[in-house]
Amino acid sequence: MSIQDVIKDQVTKNRVALYMKGTPDFPQCGFSANAIGILRACGVDQPFTVNVLENPEIRQGIKDYANWPTVPQLYVNGEFVGGCDIMIEMYQSGELQKMLEQAAV
Image 1 (tube, rainbow, N blue to C red):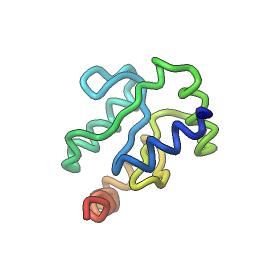
Image 2: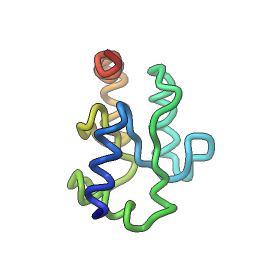
Image 3: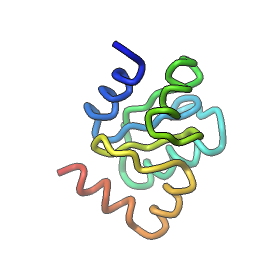
Protein backbone atom coordinates (compact mmCIF):
# COMPACT_ATOMS: atom_id res chain seq x y z
CA MET A 1 0.00 0.00 0.00
CA SER A 2 1.47 3.35 -1.03
CA ILE A 3 1.58 6.32 1.35
CA GLN A 4 -1.08 7.99 -0.81
CA ASP A 5 -3.33 4.94 -0.34
CA VAL A 6 -2.76 5.07 3.41
CA ILE A 7 -3.71 8.75 3.52
CA LYS A 8 -6.77 8.21 1.33
CA ASP A 9 -7.87 5.40 3.63
CA GLN A 10 -7.42 7.60 6.71
CA VAL A 11 -9.32 10.60 5.36
CA THR A 12 -12.19 8.55 3.95
CA LYS A 13 -12.72 6.28 6.96
CA ASN A 14 -12.77 9.09 9.51
CA ARG A 15 -15.42 11.81 9.60
CA VAL A 16 -12.91 14.41 10.83
CA ALA A 17 -9.20 13.93 10.19
CA LEU A 18 -6.52 16.40 11.19
CA TYR A 19 -2.89 16.06 10.11
CA MET A 20 -0.89 18.06 12.59
CA LYS A 21 2.48 18.51 14.26
CA GLY A 22 2.24 16.80 17.62
CA THR A 23 -0.86 15.42 19.31
CA PRO A 24 -4.12 17.02 20.46
CA ASP A 25 -2.84 17.06 24.05
CA PHE A 26 0.67 18.22 23.10
CA PRO A 27 0.68 20.16 19.81
CA GLN A 28 4.17 20.92 18.53
CA CYS A 29 3.39 24.21 16.77
CA GLY A 30 1.04 27.11 17.23
CA PHE A 31 -0.90 26.40 14.03
CA SER A 32 -1.61 22.83 15.14
CA ALA A 33 -2.62 24.10 18.59
CA ASN A 34 -5.04 26.56 16.97
CA ALA A 35 -6.47 23.88 14.68
CA ILE A 36 -7.20 21.44 17.49
CA GLY A 37 -8.60 24.28 19.61
CA ILE A 38 -10.99 25.26 16.84
CA LEU A 39 -12.19 21.68 16.43
CA ARG A 40 -12.78 21.40 20.17
CA ALA A 41 -14.67 24.73 20.13
CA CYS A 42 -16.87 23.21 17.41
CA GLY A 43 -17.63 20.21 19.63
CA VAL A 44 -15.27 17.75 17.94
CA ASP A 45 -13.65 16.21 21.00
CA GLN A 46 -12.06 13.15 19.41
CA PRO A 47 -10.98 13.88 15.84
CA PHE A 48 -8.78 11.35 14.08
CA THR A 49 -5.34 12.92 14.20
CA VAL A 50 -2.01 12.06 12.63
CA ASN A 51 1.23 13.42 14.05
CA VAL A 52 3.24 14.10 10.89
CA LEU A 53 6.42 14.47 12.95
CA GLU A 54 6.39 10.72 13.62
CA ASN A 55 6.50 9.71 9.97
CA PRO A 56 8.44 11.62 7.28
CA GLU A 57 6.55 9.77 4.52
CA ILE A 58 3.20 10.96 5.88
CA ARG A 59 4.60 14.46 6.44
CA GLN A 60 5.50 14.81 2.76
CA GLY A 61 2.70 12.58 1.51
CA ILE A 62 -0.07 14.70 2.99
CA LYS A 63 1.35 17.79 1.31
CA ASP A 64 1.32 15.97 -2.01
CA TYR A 65 -2.12 14.44 -1.40
CA ALA A 66 -3.89 17.80 -1.14
CA ASN A 67 -1.33 19.79 -3.10
CA TRP A 68 -1.13 21.98 0.01
CA PRO A 69 2.33 22.93 1.29
CA THR A 70 1.69 23.22 5.02
CA VAL A 71 0.45 21.32 8.05
CA PRO A 72 -2.03 21.24 9.76
CA GLN A 73 -4.54 20.01 7.23
CA LEU A 74 -8.20 19.31 7.98
CA TYR A 75 -10.38 16.78 6.16
CA VAL A 76 -14.11 16.38 6.72
CA ASN A 77 -15.88 13.37 5.22
CA GLY A 78 -12.89 12.73 2.97
CA GLU A 79 -12.76 16.26 1.58
CA PHE A 80 -9.84 18.62 2.11
CA VAL A 81 -11.01 21.72 4.00
CA GLY A 82 -7.74 23.62 4.44
CA GLY A 83 -5.09 24.65 6.88
CA CYS A 84 -5.14 26.74 10.03
CA ASP A 85 -5.87 30.10 8.37
CA ILE A 86 -8.82 28.69 6.45
CA MET A 87 -10.11 26.98 9.60
CA ILE A 88 -9.95 30.29 11.48
CA GLU A 89 -11.85 32.12 8.72
CA MET A 90 -14.47 29.38 8.46
CA TYR A 91 -14.88 29.23 12.24
CA GLN A 92 -15.31 33.01 12.52
CA SER A 93 -17.97 32.98 9.80
CA GLY A 94 -19.79 29.97 11.29
CA GLU A 95 -19.19 27.94 8.14
CA LEU A 96 -16.97 25.35 9.84
CA GLN A 97 -19.53 24.66 12.55
CA LYS A 98 -22.21 24.06 9.90
CA MET A 99 -19.91 21.79 7.92
CA LEU A 100 -19.08 19.72 11.00
CA GLU A 101 -22.73 19.51 12.05
CA GLN A 102 -23.75 18.29 8.59
CA ALA A 103 -20.88 15.81 8.58
CA ALA A 104 -22.19 14.24 11.77
CA VAL A 105 -25.47 13.25 10.13
